[in-house]
Image (cartoon, rainbow, N blue to C red; front, top):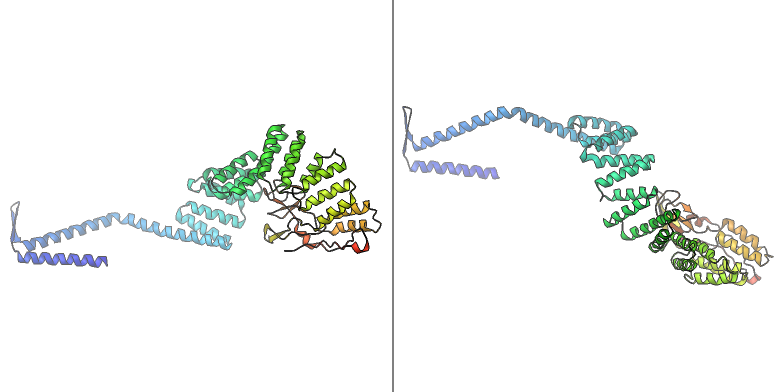
Length: 480
């Protein structure tokens, strides 16, 4: 469209010039070196235009002759470039399709056509990995590191190899290099933090966590909880080195940041107890009981009052249970105190309440292919621990009707007691730890009823008492 408009304009200008010169005739005389030329203005203008056209044509022809070799080379390079990137694309498709031979062939062709640019190194490394040649892939990734524009990508390739081979030392070194190159990349910060906590580098992990939280790579609430668990580990290290004051201060901060965990709170209570501060230890355990009523806290609380008379301990346990009166563990610790004080009636009352109280939610795998777990409604019923306490009570009352044996039999097949369950691998642990003993996940253990509770059969057991009061305890699990 634009070319047509330009052509029309030029044509109109020529016509206008011709009309102008025809309406205004005149003559031009040129004398040069003895030559004399006389002609009309129109002929002179036409001759000048012809000379300009001839000169332009000659100039174009000269430039064409001079520039032909370079133009041919440019066109050849462009064809090779297009063919090289086509081979590169086909190689990537071959990698995605799982065809190592085709990927290698395309990588060699792309390398020949593109003079070994960085992307051909990546394709060659992926093809080698697809073929199972980890050494060749490592060589390609190492070559990528030597190129500034590919250093980060080569570092990541070597990092993935180190993680697959289980070489956490090399993986940590490579992750630190990746963090120096791109500190704001989420997977780099998370991988660095994960490797640091697995290697027990708690101070370094604390610094990495702070930077990740500042860049909003890790959510504020999650970072706060992680910080509390790290402080717990730092407190243990400080106590191991004999720094009681620092260990105590870090333990207090850890409990404040992780109110849902009994482990850091129990550690804080034990630390206070070792320092002779029994009153502060008792208050710390009572405060933690409000949000995390678990046996580990009860053990520390019992240790605080081990030198007291049984009836005095019952009163102390009542004070602890009052912090969370509806929790099953509150009824259990009251029942244990009543049994120690030989208060059989109160022990039965508390055990009855414990049997009907809600246990921690059942943790079931959300997906067979993923380690994450989902929570279902909290179950009720007897567990081995409650069965043993009921058997102990029945034995104390005489056990003449065989109820002691029945409770002991029931303990074998009862719904399992709550344990720490990993939210990543669903592995179980009797003790809380900052790292899962099965998969090494950091801060992944939660207090839950194991998923195998749903397979527990129902076994009726009679309570001690008259015939009209023989209530059946089936221990059914309330499935979601």
